[in-house]
Image (cartoon, rainbow, N blue to C red; front, side, top):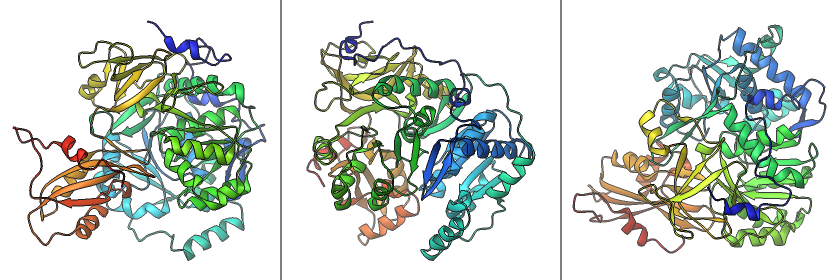
Length: 556
């Protein structure tokens, strides 16, 4: 097929670059993760860990998982952790054993966690102690038998570990009441050191993780991401950026959560494969927490969503710092606003790049050229070894410049959805991933996202689906009918708005928000409610969200 985008590839990037797509993730990272590499790998809350120490911790934890818990290749391990040192330790230990990881958002409510744990069939979990009460409410409905609990300061040296624990306890961040029988993470490392693991043979076709996503149909499901998918996507992006960076010398801000595919694959794994240093931010919000990283470290790489860059732009301390050391800044996960990109460049002197991807593609499919021109609003050019087409409802390619569904094909595309063959067939057609996004391509091969095919709402880079929220609100005894849409928002991109027909005139917005708070993660809770006597519907009774969106065109 024709590839008009190749004519605008950076001169130093080859579409036919060589990469080791036929090896596992641990093999791919082995040159950096070894006992002789004393370079700094991780920095978190003032504590630094070398690649050699990280490798030691990984092997110790792997020894525990295999010899004490009896976990083996193909078993599923849930990970409920923020960006702390324990996350990469747990993740890599599992990867070396062929254990399938199930990264889970700690912000999830018990109900949301339950779906992932049940659907994946996870039998063990590593969870931050602050979230044990959530697990306590649902664990009896899952197959989880082993619960490993860790505290933020578990891998900090004495006395720093004691100081951090005391400060967190003073601020009310301590282990909530629960009735769980947990295993101490620190004891796991001690026991694992005594019984080294025996690592199985792995191939690029083995499953690395189940990354849960709303997908294109709105039903929460696990994208089966293989070792080969991750290695390929890391290699593709590295082919794009490596010519402009110095391997092993970059300092990378890790504000994107590792439980998110963008934060895991690109913000973390890719830079670890280069031997760079990751600056982990456990709580990027309030934004002052992130700004402190720029005050303490010479940050050269920043990846984030539009809302992160916007928050930094509007922070006085960040403006005062005006860091000029940044070599590469990339926005993904949601649309990059032109005003945000312009202000970022004014403050830092660095152009803010834009890329595009989705969980099912591990995630990156497009990035703008680092050394050349790209049209305003473009998501850039397809990654090397990635084929892209724009099709109509019948699956036929549309004429150049016309909108249609964006379809991609490449080594980074998932195997399918976990235990969902029918839904897999809906999005994987003859090797092409139907993204569910409406896009167009110009004559130079640059792509633009026009709209989303479904009614998905994108709140600060997180997928939010109306069906889930409507189903939750419909359970309220005073709600007769409800419809949910996304409305434009200056900082979050979009926020959720609910249109409600009440059964009882006494129903209030406060009452609904409190009800949602028990059922939904904070970013899914409607920012506003509008009470109505009727909702627009089709002749068969289907609510017309499109008409409701037209009522909310002005930014919130």
